[in-house]
Image (cartoon, rainbow, N blue to C red; front, side, top):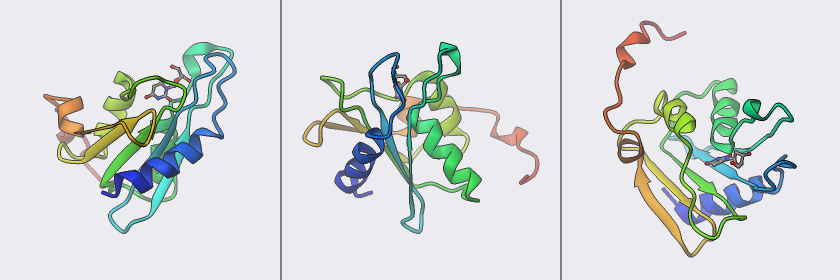
Length: 135
Ligand code: THU
């Protein structure tokens, strides 16, 4: 995974953030095995609980475009002073499509990026067998 390149795309996506409540922009760049990248940003709502994070925006865009296999994801949080990791809800949702080995990287700036994996962020993942068919 070309983390620096994906971080630049995630940073660009963060510029589209709709975050009037938190003033905290987030961008995500999700990599497909063929090199295609889907980006997403956080979209907040005045009914706070309906906010959609950048990671889920990117994933939903990719799945809506017919993709289901992903090689990794990079997240940019330019308004933070340290690398901010995906929230618990996003870890669960990403784990539906990213394997435990898939790289996950996140940073506030390009020169301080934490590189980890889906399995490290979301251990003891289970119940994939419940997806009985491909629909
Ligand atoms: N947020 C994300 O989009 N992804 C993360 O990994 C952390 C949090 C968003 C949700 C909300 O719009 C804002 O950042 C502050 O929590």
